[in-house]
Length: 228
Image (cartoon, rainbow, N blue to C red; front, side, top):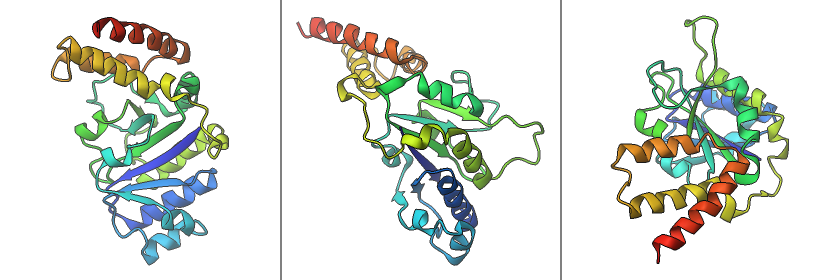
């Protein structure tokens, strides 16, 4: 399993440096930045402390969509109470949730928003699910680097295979299933502009490995039938 930690428009160099230190401490190396501040500044390097290689090798993108180009399953981190998608996943439950996907996913992203305003609704919609860190008190809240540290720690056991060759069969992957469902829904005129399309895509994120593979067989048959 490969994990990417994506920071969207971080404004404080020290936060990026501390985040780099956090993920390296837990055995990760893939840091992605979307329109970042000066993440290679002296202040960022000071907080990175022996993790400047993570900063120097970080990939920079112009948008979150670009940063997610090769990701199989993305989790948006959010503390918003008004989020109305599927149940928000408690950070401590993430390892179990990810394991249940089996070999249908191999590249997972944890996406963090801006220090002051978090992620936009559009950015959250680019991810498959939303996750949050349960806090005992509403204030003070965790800052960006602290949040990265919590997720890196929780996922560290899964990340032991971070550099292993992905086992996922592209034809049986979660993303491949989404493409099949999308093709079917558009063929029957229930595309992205219809409410049911979004709800269906949300429900698919709940599926475990066996259900994903079962639906691959069903959708393949449906597509063959639709194609005549």
